[in-house]
Image 1 (cartoon, helix red, strand yellow):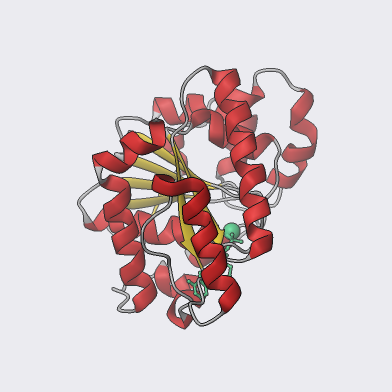
Image 2 (tube, helix red, strand yellow):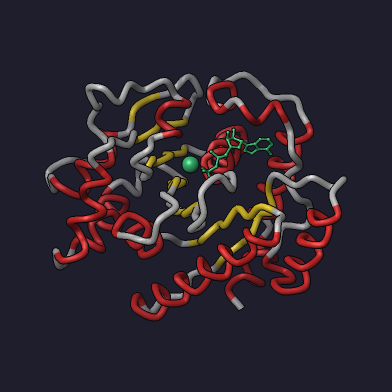
Length: 256
Ligand code: ADP
Ligand code: MG
């Protein structure tokens, strides 16, 4: 099983949308995929219409109850071969409490390891905060995929994110390859174009060649999660981005 952490320390950059679209593409390519909602706001779970009140069993149990198996917490969705492990609001308390509990930084990795035969890919939708959940996701990931909006402020957020990835990489003593997907790109604005150029200048081969454009069809996460085939520029761009991610050459660049 390959684990991809979809992360950026900034909110609203398209993490959840990227998680959904890449997972959908992986399923369409024939893989068995688990998406994990690690954000206490639970947008991904809402997209699959999983009620959070009362909360379903899900990601929270992975950290609090070692007897819970990820392969049983993942539930079927409207999309064949795609399972989702939902988030609960209680994850937020864990984020505050967890830092002092030794060993909790590796809890997610252990659960994923135990589920490695049930899925080909696990895609982790991370919260926009640097805390226990994000650290667990990065510690467990084979790859970091950072969606980044093409605006000047978002570039700062990306720098912070990559610094965090460096830190986790040093402590786990295993490379964490990374890829950057420019999102919500408005090619009509000057700042959008400049930020995109800057991304390519700074991070070169780590950046997906084609940005994900602003696309109203992608605004409705429930539609993306419904199983219907989305025909739109944004959905096409995500299919291209996935092809690029699956290309062994891009992975070599990331690891270099
Ligand atoms: P995050 O998970 O980083 O907070 P989301 O994926 O939830 O970001 O995206 C933030 C908002 O922007 C959501 O309302 C989402 O539906 C919308 N959105 C995401 N990508 C696009 C896009 N390419 N075009 C238009 N709207 C988008
Ligand atoms: Mg989100």
